[in-house]
Each structure stands twice: as C-alpha cells, then as structure tokens.
Image 1 (spheres, rainbow, N blue to C red):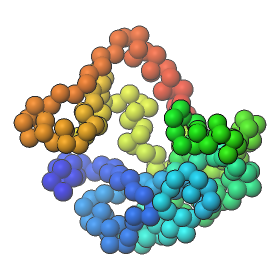
Image 2: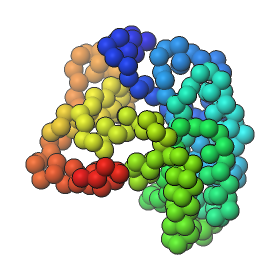
Image 3: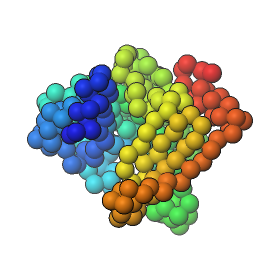
Image 4: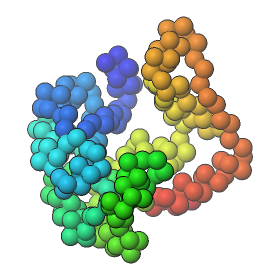
Length: 244
C-alpha cells in the first residue's frame, strides 16, 4: 500500500495486477481497486475446458468468464486477457469460438501466444510419446490471421506482434520493454534495466529475504555492449507497429 501510494501521489500511473481467473472474487477485485490498481491482467488461455485441463490450468471456461464480469463489477475498465492458439488438438473452430468469446466480454486488451513446446515440459513429453499431436504450421498461421482480422475489425489496434488493444489501452508496462525504457524490478527474481545494464535478483524467496534483511543484495548483472543495444533496438522495434 505504501509503495502504491507513493507512485500515485506523484502522477497517475497504470498499475497492473496479474491474477488467475479461478482466484478472483468480487471482494478481492474491489480491494485491488481501492488500493489504486487500475488494470487487471488474466491468463485465460482458452474457453475450452478440455484444453485448459490439458495445459494444466486450474480454472475452467465459466470461471474465466465470471472473473471478467466480477472485475467489471468492481470497477475495472482496463482489463487484459491472455489467449493461446496452436494448442494440441485445438481445431480452427475451437479457436474461432475462443476469439468470439473474448470479444463478447468487452475487455480492452488481448494478448495472444502460439504454443511453443519447450524441452522437458509435460506437453513436450506427451508430444514425444505420441499422446498428443501438434497443430500444423499452416493451421497455426490461419489461426493467427483469423485473430488479426477479427480483432482489428472490432476496433482493436494491433500494436505489437502478440498484443491488441482498444485505443489508449495499450499496456504501458509491456510497452516499456519494447521501447527500451529503463525500469526497476522489486522482489525475488525481479529484473531491472537502466539502459545499459540488466540485473536480476535471486529467485529463491528465502535467500532474497535473507539478503534484504541484511541489506546486502547480490543481483546478477549483465552489461550490454553498444552492438547488443543496437541489435535489441532493431529487434524490439520490428515487433511493434511503430517500427524502428
């Protein structure tokens, strides 16, 4: 509360909280608003129950829909949801239903991500065992094209490769990364960037608390060369509609 108060005392900020749909109640949402949090981001991922179970999510489709409605009832008028496509066994029809359901909820921001099979994960193990089947690249591209077409037709600005927002509802937090803006991270595992150096705190919570109590932080530090900063400027710029 003290940190948020300090931020909002100086000038209006976008203050986002990320939450799992299954954990949201009206009381929690109202408390967040009372604290000054004015943007809510939820990892919905899908409105298909069997796909949610497959990727290990704790909520179901009804809970996701209700979570958005509860947030709106608590006064949130800047809500973002995440969706995933190219999930195993996901059909084009399922994806079309998910996109239309997302549009029907009246949210202001939608982030979308194609599934990537990372080595050593549960889904990758299932894929290698032949228990699930990956969506082919052509279908994945069709899903992305449908997404872009539908969201832009409904007033969303495609301002970053994976992100869509209604006018003036672009994520200021995420945009700072793409615009190469310095930022500070507080807490275990948090990252900071000053324009030349990146540093990140130890991720183990007990160790972080011990360092904090001793007032002796030992973050990992990476110093970027001029060539690295130049390359990142180009790479990040190409992700956005602003370009380089």
